[in-house]
Length: 380
Image (cartoon, rainbow, N blue to C red; front, side):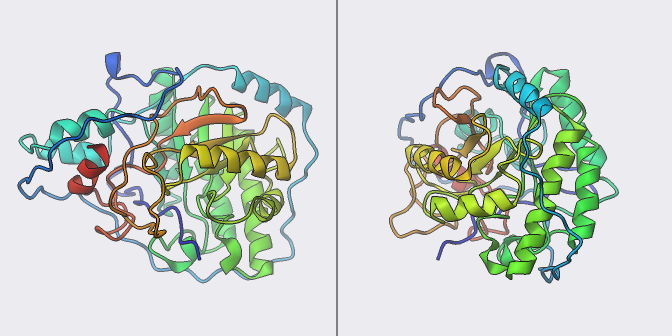
């Protein structure tokens, strides 16, 4: 049995706190050159004073998976010539990834200027661009919060990575349970999410675990979820033709490529009207090489336009997955390849830090809370 891959923090609704990274420019900017996995010099394990924990967002109760509804329609698999043109334009863009100036790690750094782990955590984690998660169901504020990120990125000529994470029945009632109360509410939430995208280049990692973990749903519930996901991709790409939308492929230790591709096809991932490809390894630890091979197998089985590609979460996969299969805050892991839009690998569009290094999977603390000791262990 493979556990959920995407235990994360919810984005604060009332305070507007986002799980994201700093953006200071200059020498700290994330360049687009091909990068290798960091080879970090060993650092001593340093005891430290107890830090003041950052504010966290509590998990929502698990909603009951929605009942099947016959009115939902599957996505069309017919390629659009307009989409193909946009796809080519996006593929040739050489842009830098965005770091948003608000995150749990930055909150901790500001609150702990004298902590002996601070310099390592800042230079090796906080200075890297990473995804911004929107994991709370807050229809009234979602447009403004998405717009705050995309407009900030556009002003700097950079590409934000956004993670909508509010599908009903999320995480099958596990550590990151929650999401919208039903698919109609989710569809409306996605509409408001899309309204904040603007017109700049943006990467959307659409609903981690929503496809790979859908075996917990009945066949009818799964079909309804997939119809909503296909609709979500179309809505996002219609709202911003420069948006790149990627669908959940799990990871190389989860579902076989053929099974995963069949589900992805039902969810709209093979259609250029809703998809630019797939993502894998979110919040997991499989090596980049394993994920490259797996993603290419999934893409081959998926079909669709040859321009479909994959993005890989490399945030914590420097040492690969633990031999015992532990997925929740396992010891002995390390940072993976730094984020880049230039991987040098065919059909691999980007290496991204989707999971935020140092934020708990739910075992070292509430999901999404920042653990300086965990961050330091990853960075050293």
